[in-house]
Length: 170
Figure 1: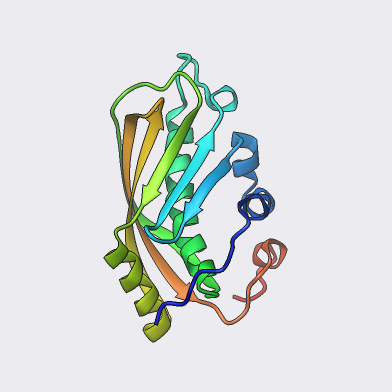
Figure 2: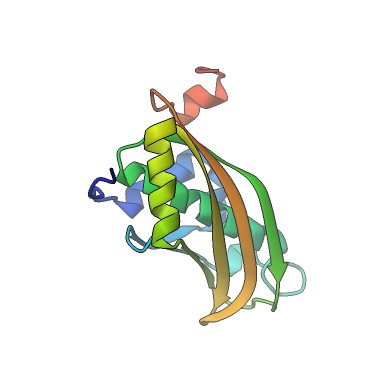
């Protein structure tokens, strides 16, 4: 059974990411909006800290944004159902379509059936897999397409970033 989602404070989630994954802060990652149904997340990056030597967005920043966005969508879906999960990307593919030369953003979304099946599998089996497609856009034009396969497993207690880095809970 899928519960009504709880309110998720995106600024608080961003601050948690800044603490546990410092690269997100260095890149300037921001969460613009999250919706449960349909499952949808918009994440933004400023151009300045993510520029390369050709005055376009660095490919690694684009790849990181896509990966973070898919992971974040899966994490927020779990949290909205009060499920504490470890989530990892285990396979991904990224296609660069156009150069980016200004601020850019990602759009991650799932069909309702995918979201419902993911939550159901977690609730019934304690683990689930999910494929998430992400579009990287500048000015509403798709510049890159990403697909990431993520695995989620419910954990009994939520580990802090510090305890993970110190090997606690392994």
